[in-house]
Amino acid sequence: MMRLCFLSHSYAIIVIIVYIFSPVTHKCLPIYLRRRRKYKYMPISGPYKNEAIRFREEIKKKFKTQIALCNAIGAKDGSYVTGYVTGNNRIGNILREKLEAVGVDVNYILYGKRTEEAKPKPGSGQELSDLLFQCTEKIIHLQNAVIEMNKELLDVNQLLETVKKSVTKS
Image 1 (cartoon, helix red, strand yellow):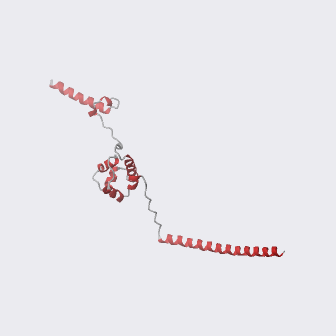
Image 2 (cartoon, one colour):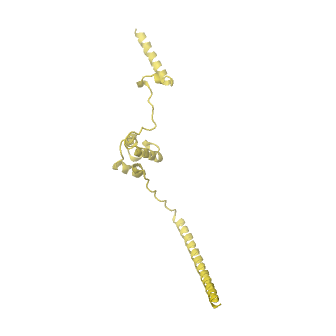
Image 3 (cartoon, helix red, strand yellow):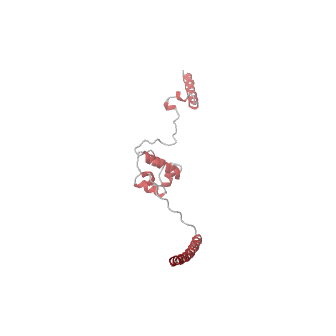
């Protein structure tokens, strides 16, 4: 009897292993023996769905993973942001400060409006002086062109005056 029990036990283990690795019979297994499906993202189920979607977008854009974000803000593990990514919690002041410190646009996450990016700083001092010199040359050129046009307008006005005088004499 003991031997029969041992054989049936080993047979059961083999059957379970075959079921686990066989994709066709996987649905025949009891639920507790099935492999769990791994979600790429946790489903969004909370009241802050739009914020959760935008938060995921920002995480993917800046950090690629939630764990990388948590490491950047000094959180212990990835579960720190789970409530915010699922839409169950809203970002508060403490997390807001941490996210802003690592460069996340929190206004976009909360309100859907992006903040203006800082304007890029110009290059070295030599490049700036070259640009200023070019601008000065253009301004001087334009001023000379305006002076020339003014002289020509004066000439046209004098010609018109002479035409008026000749017409009025005749």
